[in-house]
Length: 534
Image (cartoon, rainbow, N blue to C red; front, side, top):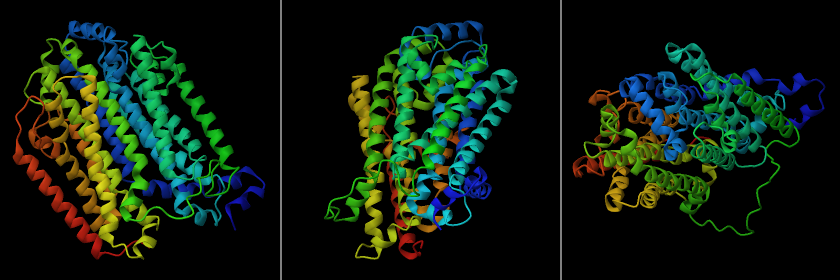
């Protein structure tokens, strides 16, 4: 029996048969990913009110912040306009865009993981041969995204209720709305491509376009009224105006977009065969051109490397262009200066800002290296690795191709970030190169932990995302909360020299590089000795 058999059965309920079972299975598979990333996002948001009250403790400080933001188009493009001087409003302004983007990323990953990923691996065909409705998998995938976004909305609403229940509810629902818009968008994209990797990349590209449109609109207007801002779901979130006379009707935009996109996804899913797409992949050449395991790894990961490279290059340009205005925005606010110095070192405010921005990109690069390393796990669990290893390709040679791309790719994207800084800022090019490259040992330690988990405990390989999320949380929230040094030292990034502005310390750099090498060697040794998933 094939999945198309369900198309001839009467009644819509047949189309959704087995949804509950698939939903429970999806939540079980994501029992680590969803809690970690929801917690990271929620803690990033909930840590902000205390920081805001410490930074802007007087009405004069808050009035100056609104004035400076209104007059600084670059910072409006980066964060958005500020509509009110309350703690809740400043919190929503400071983290809203990035929290919304993170909710969108998690949602699109969940949608693709439980739809196109399952079809590409062949598992969906096996599931569909049982008493499972044609649209059950899509429904379960979207319900999984609903659960994740509802959990985020609940945590944000409860956590910020002390600043005002109405604003907290609006902010929480807005974040969930952004997540569901991109979950349903990913569900549509997944119908058009046979590759889960391409589906994730295209949807991430749409998220990037939404960020750019919002940034362009906010740079042109200080009240969020630009047409470009209204085109972007991230712009809807800021125009919901939590804690600033909430515009509840904006939530209807999220609902309408999610419902319409969901209907389109359902309609498309019912018009194609399992495993197929509306834009089938081009046939390959008559004779193969991939002669090595490394060439195959590059073919599989080149799209991801290209996407991350473009993103880091553009981020470098943006952050570099903002640097000259940092001193004006911070002004004589000693609390803000202290946070930058905790992130970027005890140096001038400009160097501290540059060091903190480079460090932020290093934290994000750790996500790239984990994703690239875990491609090994995906190839193995989808049983695409077994035919390769059945030939003359050894395990180490096969793994080495992906690891070169993972660790070498992290160096590439940091170099491109430096090039972006050089274009956007145009000063301190040499010190900035050192600042970007000095992040690599810490990035490699996170990647090597992923290698270790995959090689020794493949069933726990996805825990590497938890490690990356914890490090990201420490790096983002720790300095703002003035966390104890013992907490900051849990992250390998906490041991790096603060460049530019600080002195170079080779000891920690060499130690972290050595640790990364040992962990990779241990992971590869484990891979050689264990069974390959069948």
